Amino acid sequence: MDTNTPNQETQQSATSFRVTVRDRKRVILDKEAKAMTAHNETGTFDVLPQHANFISLINQSLTVHTTDGKKVTIPINNGVLKVKENGIHCYINLLSAQAQQQAALK
Image (cartoon, rainbow, N blue to C red; front, side, top):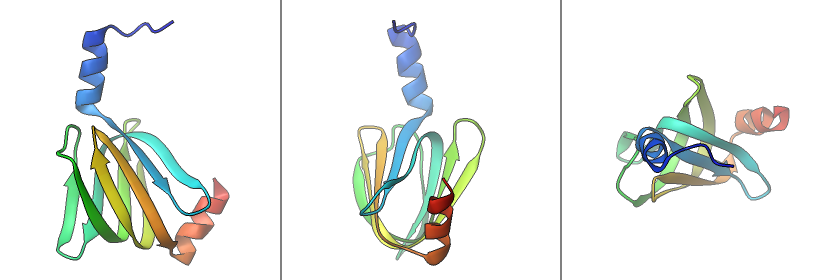
């Protein structure tokens, strides 16, 4: 049974969003977050809750600031980031060797 009232659900979605990062074979990260930092060819950018929908090619790394206060950084070579309806989906084409090692440990 869901104990959240509609007002609590609205408040939670206004302060967090779901981040899913995957490569061709597996989901690398699937967490609630309060912010995410990424890089593209024009520079570094942040995504916060209730961000406008958009798609970007990304490179270098992703840093996810989770709702439990942790910071998860995933080094990447390139990928696609899609922000839609208060959620983020990252499709990583090529992980760096370091990111592959991190994913293997999870």
